[in-house]
Image (tube, rainbow over all chains, first blue to last red; front, side):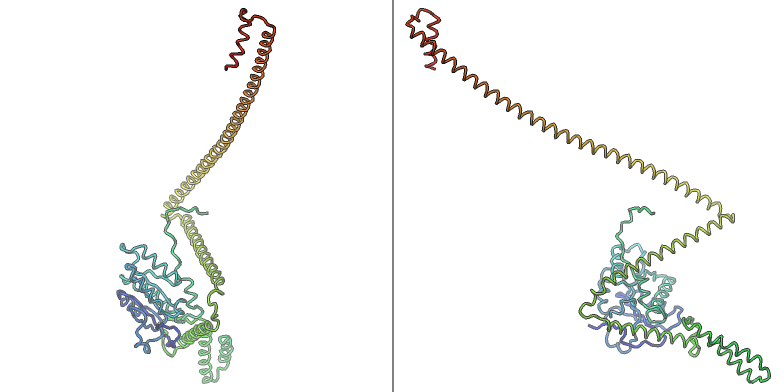
Amino acid sequence: MSVLNMFHKHPELNTASILLVETERQHQDKLAEAILAAQRSFNVNVHLADSLPLPTRNEANRPRIDLVVFIVNHFSSRSLELTKSYLQHLDVMYFLGRLCFLVNDARSAKSDPDKLHAVREMAAKYSSPLLFTELQTEQGLATAADRLLVFTKVSAGFVPGVSSLFLNTLTSCSHPMESSSNTLVDTD
Amino acid sequence: MAAAGSEPLGEAADCSAENTVDMDVFQKLNTASQKLGQAVKINYWTPADPTSNNEESYKYMFRLKQQLAKQCEDMKIRLKIDEDYNFLNPISEAKPDITEALTELETAKNQHQKTTLALHRAQVACTISEKVVKEDKQTESIKETVNHTLRLYSQILNLQEEGNKLRSQVQEVRKKRLTLKKDALMNMVEIRKVSKMKEKKVQSMKSEVLKQGQEYLEKYLNIADLTENVFQGLILGSNVNWATDPHLREIVLQLEKNFSV
């Protein structure tokens, strides 16, 4: 089973690489463009994929991937299942802060709270951050790109004193609570 | 340190006013060492701005150096993981440590959030009080809302007190009911006991009385039989004509009646 490995390649000077994985290829391109257009002080390579494992014929040309982003489509449960199966092809070191889940348009009317709950549970299980984005608007794209760049900076080692695991402990998703918001709790 | 070292050099450059060539050189050296000192000062964290990606600038060099150092640290961590890997029990040894660390982390996060909330609250209160003092156009609305909230708070307190009183009353009533029930049960049990005892007594008495009565009856019947037999014997033995006297006839026939019965 081919596994995407973190430390099998040398990092390039002042360059970071992001891998965007999305099963339906809806928002990858726009997000990649936004990342490349964002203000940054280092070079970024954005790789797009719709499944893992990555094809082996490009293995030699591919640089070291610093951040893996899974764009989960929470309108279909199939996307969630496929994403879970892709996680098997990642090296262990990615789960320590070099992995990120992304959900688009969670505020829309046709979103199912159960499916959102399931995505949150998965993110909490692998203690990775879960970003809620609005990739339909320009401002949303720019915001998402900035947030992802912060993650890449830390996981590529461009911020001295901050390791990806430190950032992960602050940004990892917590287990969602049971939805019992009807009980009023007495404070103090 | 380099910045401090450059100062006396500058003074020395100022003193020697005759040799202008030397001064130029010294000045250049001075400026260069000052820059170096500044760069060393910010060596801990060289800020990254997109404009300073000029390949030759000092800042860029230092930033690259820091990046490479950090990447080497990451790789060292990866190697250390392999060194420390316990093949027999990879997780179980560290599990209590992990759970402890996670709980500590959660408490630290919560603490931080609480303190930020408290800080925000303090800041808001401060700005509100300043505004109120300043007698701005917003002062009226602020005062209104504050008064409204105070009224609501007093209402809340009153209602809570009432609720507490009612609750305690309900509790007392329940207690009384409970004691009454217990008493009723006890009384019923006693009543049953007493009635049972009475029945037993009555029955035993009845049987006793019956027995005694029967005994007496038998005794007296025997006595009566005896006396009758004795009288009959007397009458027959005394050769009296008992057929003529009705009383004597009665007594003798009585025996036959008894025998036939």
